[in-house]
Image (cartoon, rainbow, N blue to C red; front, side, top):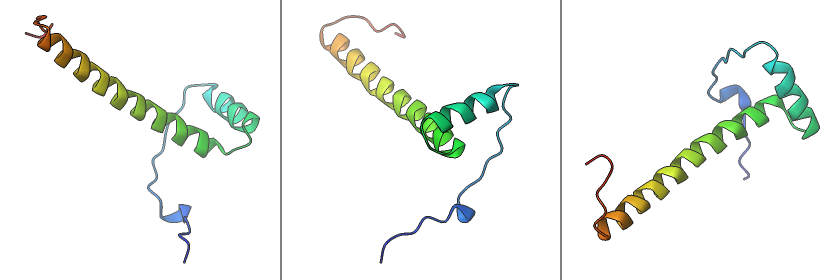
Length: 75
């Protein structure tokens, strides 16, 4: 049996947008032939994924610097 997504049971969160941003979001979603919700969820997911990748990269750089004896900036 295939999983069916029910948006009525999904978590909900009200977002207050600055003046004019709703129109920008609507135009971007329309240009990409998808819903405003889909565009906003994708933007949030990309932001969170980007932060996670940045943290992994920073950790790797800190370990590489430590291995070479370079003092850490927070030390």
